Image (cartoon, rainbow, N blue to C red):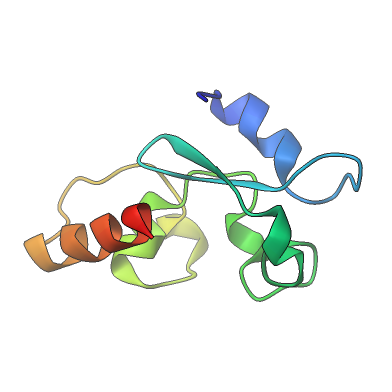
Length: 87
């Protein structure tokens, strides 16, 4: 499934009638089963409804890193992101 950023943000956990999605390298994952983590107030709520590729690669929750932009990431960070994507 592919969603634009504008479509993806609608699945950020604030509407209980919709699933919670997080994207990694443009690939959308349904993380609704982890609502306590990705839903409002959860420790990873900032990733919900967004492509969190850069933040996951860098293992950070910094708002400026919650983006699909992979430019400048190290080989190690790309490896971390690949692990996220495959698990």
